[in-house]
Amino acid sequence: MKEIRFTDTTFRDGHASLWAQGMRTGMMLAHARDMDRAGFVAMEVIANSNFKKCVRELREDPWERIRRLSDALPNTPTTAMAGAGSPAPFGIAPLELMKLYMRTLAANGIRRLHVMDACNSMTGRLVETVPFAQSLGMDVVVALVFSISPKHTDEHYAEKARQAVELGADKVYLKDSGGLLTPERIRTIVPAIIASVGDTPLEFHTHCTTGLGPMSLLAAVEEGIDTVHTAVPPLANGSSQPSIFNVASNLRAKGYETLVDEGPLRRVSDDLYRIAINEGFPMGSPLEYDYAQFVHQVPGGVISNLRHQLTQIGMIQKLPEILDESIQVRRDLGFPIMVTPFSQFVVSQATINILNGERYKVVTDEIIKYTLGDFGEEASLGVEEEIREIIMDRPRAKDLAAREHHEPTVEELRESFGGGISDEELLLRYAVGGDADVKAMREAGPIKEYSLQGRPLVDIVASIAQREDLNRVSINEPGLSLVVEGRKSMNGSRRH
Image 1 (cartoon, rainbow, N blue to C red):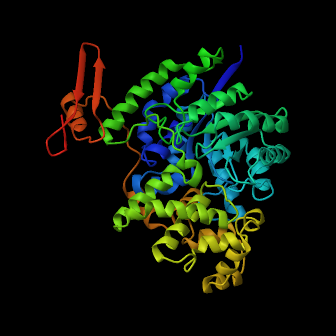
Image 2 (cartoon, one colour):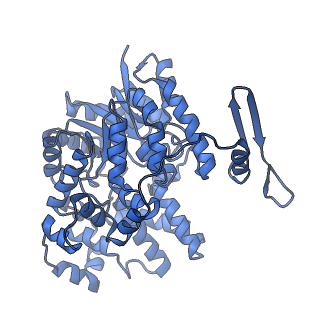
Image 3 (tube, rainbow, N blue to C red):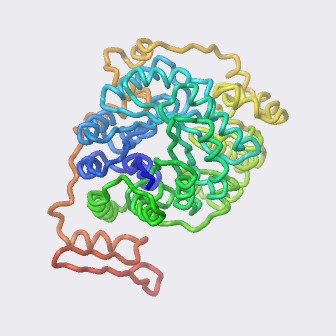
């Protein structure tokens, strides 16, 4: 009987996909002990994108989050999603700062690093990132980011997998950020990659955005993958990863042995549902098949942010046009993979094109830098020549092309923030773009514990009654069974 292992994403990709990174450290720590008992291969707990959210909105120190979770998960390697090793999700950090970031992650307890290049280039910064992270004692798992385009063939991924192994990756993982893989494509792409990686372990990561994530995961296992990424409900499904409970049940039905203890995870899931109710967070649920996602490939998180921004300026009716324009902009740029930061670049430019009523009349700095090759030659070479001429004819393009390329040292960066600050403080200020938010975070005090104990039942029921997105909630405890159902009043509002 083949054994299947699990990497957990609940504390990182799960709440990034569904709770807009709104899960507080106290919520994680309250469940860390049970999560540690489950037997995961690893647990994602942080990403470079979390730093800005933690500091600016949650007023929490992400370094303290890493330290405390690493201490609370002694049996489970804590994992950081680090892009190519940069402390910031957009732009390209100086190499020495990237090394400082990885060194500080390791010093605070991170034992495994998920790294990727948005172009799947294995000749850029990953050449430095992989061996340096390994020298710090971290296992490095290199991503092959899936996309659909004329150039993203099975042969492309087989070659990139071979190159990742040549870099010295401890493991490789097929990262389906958009949930675009189908069981049919799995049956050709996974064997091609396995043939290239040889003895290097291969993992599988997908999202449920198109409704096919759970089926694609099962197909990946049938094709030879033995470690898969899942999340604990309600931070599973929706635009997140498949549910650990659904996946494990289906795998056992197919004759596989699942190396995970679901008992403690049931307790975690129950509490996370309560947190969702108390905090007004959405709950992941299976999605219907969405063919449009295969066409525009814009990630769900980017769409939700765009919808919010368009609503604020009274232009929400433009959303379908912008998504259509995103398809064309992506084609113009040579089919970049719709993953951070390229998905944001493409959608921002498409929005400007539509709202201006003229394509590329105004071009973002990021698109200019992409065309200039700042994000790698492999990316810039794909730009259509006619579009390249239009972009490079913009006055701003001439300014950016003429700039001097100088990588500041760590000490120069430290001095730019006033000097006399620790490595952790420097990295925080670099990630959030200044010291004002970091200062406000410090003034907010240490991370607060989170507990559901002692919350009166009447308060829980009252909070449920305010939720417009819930039709029915069942609370079952020893000696208590309570069902709260909603119905619409004559004016269409929800009544409980």
